[in-house]
Amino acid sequence: MSRWSERVEELLYDGETVDEQVEVGTAAVVVTSHRVLVFTPDGDGPNFRQVDRPNVTGVSLQAGGDAKFLRQAARAALYGLILIVTGVLLPLDDVLSGVGLPSSTGQLGIGGIMGMFQQMLSLLRNLDDFMRLVGALLLLFAVVPMGVYLWTRERTLEISVAGDEAIRIPAPETEREAIAERLEMAILPPGVSGEPDSRLGSLLG
Image (tube, rainbow, N blue to C red; front, side, top):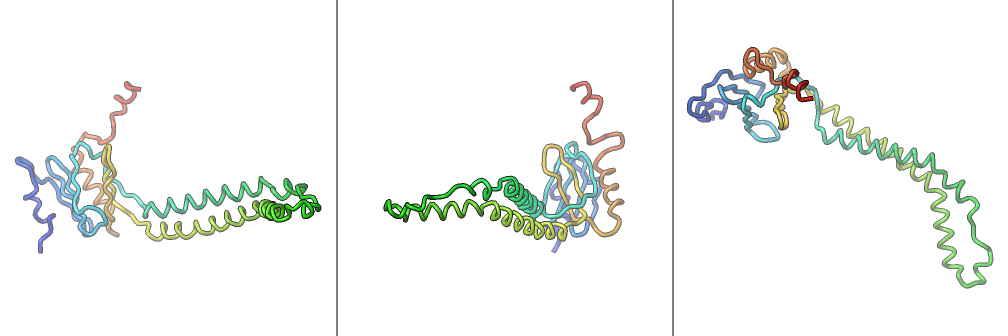
């Protein structure tokens, strides 16, 4: 069964021609006179993306993993540090050490209520220790998603798109640099840069 990357002619506009076609593992990148067509049939996202050539700002090699694991690790580490620092800087045991209840509360008929209040004071005195414990557990937990992120980290071929999310393709083990250079030369004509003109930026600034 043929793949769409092998039937590009059926996707071309009138007057559009194919300038370059590069196989990147199981993916394929086709550079036409008008667009950049990316076929990723084995990827997690769409099987096909297209970008007008003027919107492509460059092609590069990047290393990265699943960002959601990195975000989970960062959140867990941040909350853990906040709890530990708060537990250290807020010694509730010292603050509440002088707080107590009179011994005659039983005679006033409110011994039950005062007993509950005494339990609350006891919990508050140990709250800083509890915060430090939970903070340490969160820091320990942060190691797990960070390890998963590093495990899934891989080299990718990144096609940068102005005003939109970059297109990322798993890069092959060999000839990565050559493939990236070949694609960039095919997408960006000689003398054309995908980056904003620095002289125009200075004038506008």
